[in-house]
Length: 146
Image (cartoon, rainbow, N blue to C red; front, side, top):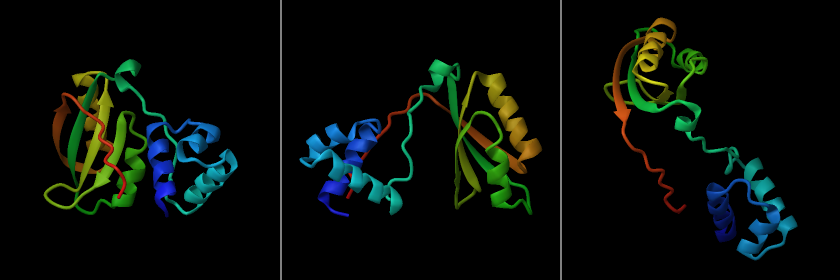
């Protein structure tokens, strides 16, 4: 991966919908050359997906929280991940080391919705213990690529 590939990735991180023409102009290459580079970066796994950033509050999900989870003894992490994908409101799952087995980021309508989500984690996903923290403000940070 060279400097131009890194520039392309940075530009796509800011705007995944940028055209190949505009992307090419920004890195001083033709649209076709940039398209080839992007396809190669996808094929090599450097670019995993093109995503839309969603304002969850605009969708009525005004409360976001981090939930540390501890799994019940014998609960398989792969099975947990598959089950948790079916629980509405779960945005991200990270398996962790330390006192808790994982960390979830969730988006909920309100406290009652958060409580029902936690109940679903305990009832359906093999979660033994939770520790929740409400997110008051979050700022996306995109550090430059090395």
